[in-house]
Length: 73
Image (cartoon, rainbow, N blue to C red; front, side, top):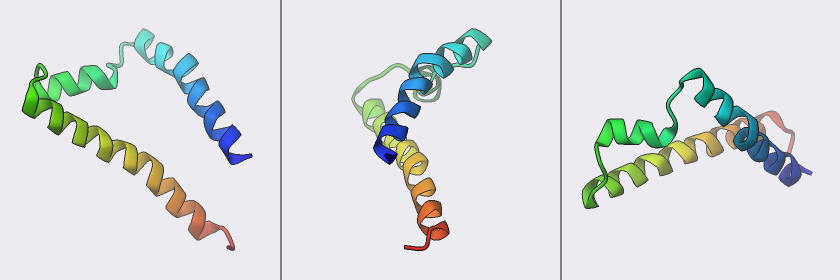
């Protein structure tokens, strides 16, 4: 059940939230990385990839940690 909800949330986010934010003028994550690190080269790709990995881990691990604390498992 959770896999279905996560998949549905990702699909809704990609289909509705991202275009809406672009319409409002909010820069995408790719534009943010180019703004922070400049045009990609060997070193910038590694740093940007590491930065992206950290962001994804924070987005995924903190909710899981809070879910485990709140549940009675």
